Image 1 (tube, rainbow, N blue to C red):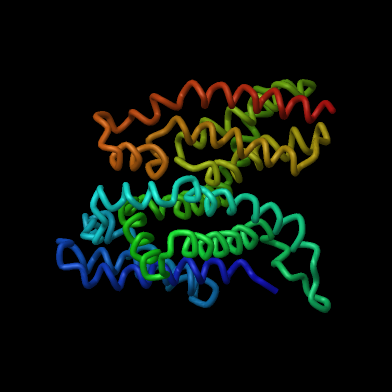
Image 2 (cartoon, rainbow, N blue to C red; image 1 turned 135 degrees about the vertical axis):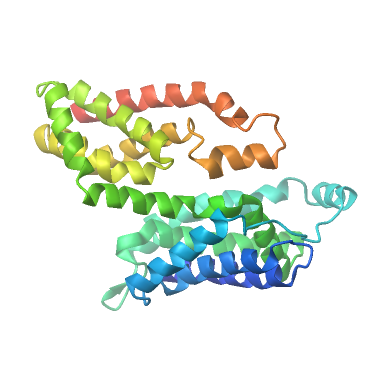
Length: 317
């Protein structure tokens, strides 16, 4: 079986190897702490299944301390100059898009095709994480195609991976941190509190207002938490499961999928989603760190309204 852990191992390996370059980069004023940050981050991907929870918790605390005290900086990456990049772009043309397009196409093909293949009694892909495994396979294939098209090498890819991950910086760990925070909120009973409030506010006979509360709640809670994965367990336990799924009998898969999409609308509206909204503003050198959010808010509100209507229509159908 191709397990999802293999994908995590690959991500972790890239991070650990990138940290080796960082440790050796004397242009980085914090090369030791920066290298340690990415090395620990990579080891967390690789060893999460085998490390005791307490030890993994210490690794997470170390990562937070390194980032919180300014230990993560950027360095030098040996990038090609503008003329070389323009010459490469002109030579490759639209072929540059082939690897990027391959990733979603191969992911869908993997989910729809490889998920049905069995080797003996075992499925080829991890049945609990088919999409993630298919995405990992698609990314590897796309990377190999990119090497062929660009006549490049794994070493160049590793250096570029290091440049990109260090450009994102400490914000790279936010999705995992916030997802864990959402689970903690759910375990602490925040979902039950939301459920009690929903029972007092939402009319029990109204499917529309239940859908409205769930979708808008996903967006608002995502804005507070910075990540839809953090909002999902709380809002789903508080509104979707007892009302939309339990009371009105709507299909759980459809509710979950559209609910997550509604949460992503909140991602477009919050500086808490730093890796989506604040980091790009910094990378692009925009005058305001909120410029990305200002450009996105009309789209976010329109898509949120569409999600509400879509979930209601799906529920009625």
